[in-house]
Length: 249
Ligand code: NAD
Image 1 (cartoon, helix red, strand yellow):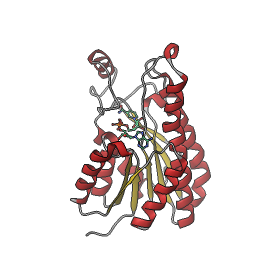
Image 2 (spheres, helix red, strand yellow):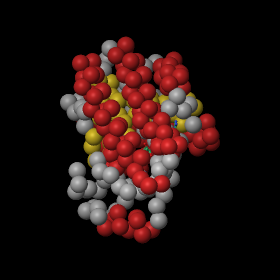
Image 3 (cartoon, rainbow, N blue to C red):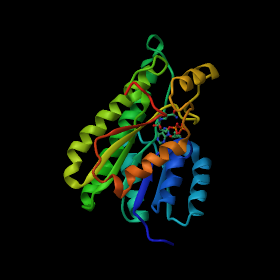
Image 4 (cartoon, rainbow, N blue to C red):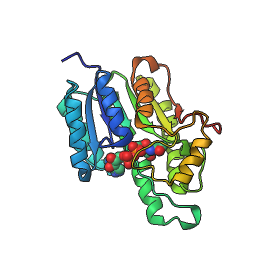
């Protein structure tokens, strides 16, 4: 087995963007820990099997990132199994499409529990682990194009993704002194199960995108690969779009 670049943990890795990030970071030479909810066990196991064929050490942890004890247990389990934590990718997120006049308190709170509280908990506990290790680290969060501008169909989701940029910038300000960088990726419309829209909206989005297509998960994984690498060592507090050229940034 080739020597490891360190240990990367990716939440929400059973499918979509998280899965693509896990596979890419394994190709980059990281040992990889993957997390998802237990009801995604079958898909997560398939990702683990695929990672193992790449010759890297792999660890799987089921847990809900919106629950603090789950996040504490997840980080401990990764460090016990793989020896350290060097890259934290707080990718897990949910989207419930509702406009302002229809948004329920239940949907608003659920979106914020997973997207905002879950990201906060991953930043907090990964940050604590990296500070204790004393060797710096990389913390990477999942914001969105909807974290830079609002859209009527994702009222509460957009608020949660704006909040993740706030967490990212503030954590970068605090953790830079320890050599830990904190950045976020901001995908545009990316073809995954989360992105459920009809063809008319898809065509509208494509026509408003200079590069003329929707994204695929590997578009995002390539940016995360860079943010996890030595080449991004002097970049922190940034929320970087990977969206085919959105001109509202
Ligand atoms: P997806 O639905 O395909 O995958 C998300 C994964 O997160 C799923 O496997 C799901 O089970 C897991 N998950 C959900 N809640 C969880 C929890 N509480 N704890 C642990 N895991 C949980 O979605 P995706 O499109 O791959 O999205 C990944 C991230 O990228 C999300 O944060 C999303 O908001 C963000 N994003 C996606 C798009 C897009 O167009 N697909 C655009 C911008 C941002």
